[in-house]
Length: 99
Image (cartoon, rainbow, N blue to C red; front, side, top):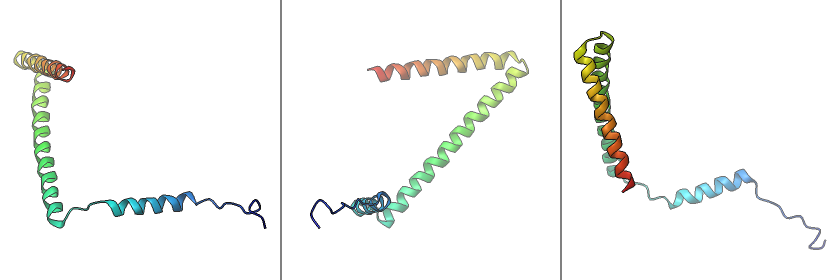
């Protein structure tokens, strides 16, 4: 057999993927158990706070919408004020990104 007769065997793509994945996972610096628990507590706390915040917003907007549907003038005025405040905040946030 000459060198030209030998076929070059290619790696199986799936086997190569798992081999490279395993090599990358060995490079990872895994957190200790204590770090894991404190990061978990932070995630849970932020999740609960965001749920309360979004629930509060949902409640406020629901009350405003019920007032608008009932055609109560006070709720219509409050809704317009809230919409203008949100529009102003969006414009200010948009300008802050340009700087």
